[in-house]
Image (cartoon, rainbow, N blue to C red; front, side, top):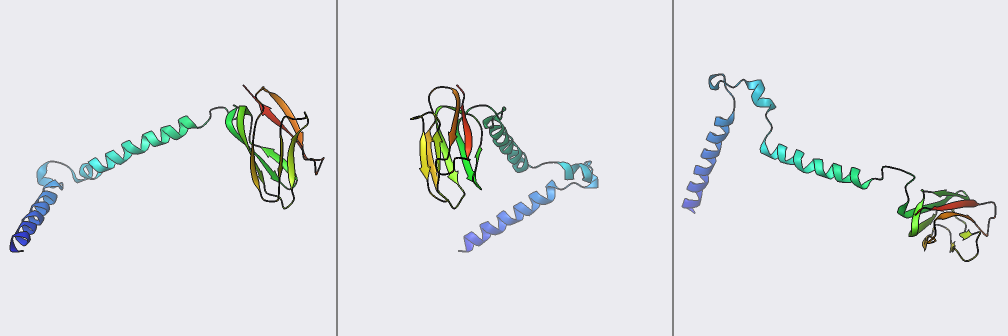
Length: 152
């Protein structure tokens, strides 16, 4: 136990000497202002690790908001469709119903897609394989209309 205390004391004394030696003084020839602006290796490492993460986010973001994506969202709110953008052929389409009423996303062209969903429900379906504009309605509320754009 005595040996551990002695070693701990030596380590602490060495650390204090090291810290005191790192500070700038008038005698060292390094101005104090210059010493304050110096970054530590830890700060440099943090800056280095943050930069690639930001670049990765930018790279993953689409440059063109109208570019077809692998997943698109159709949101139903207040008996209206809001479509997040064009979708790639055969991609997944997510439908989120924010209304307290049931709705559908039913293609005007029979057999293309027909999703039925209840109040506050989320469903998915697969976009058509052929590029084109696919108009759809809500069979319960025919005034609700939208167009799914499939780009290849």
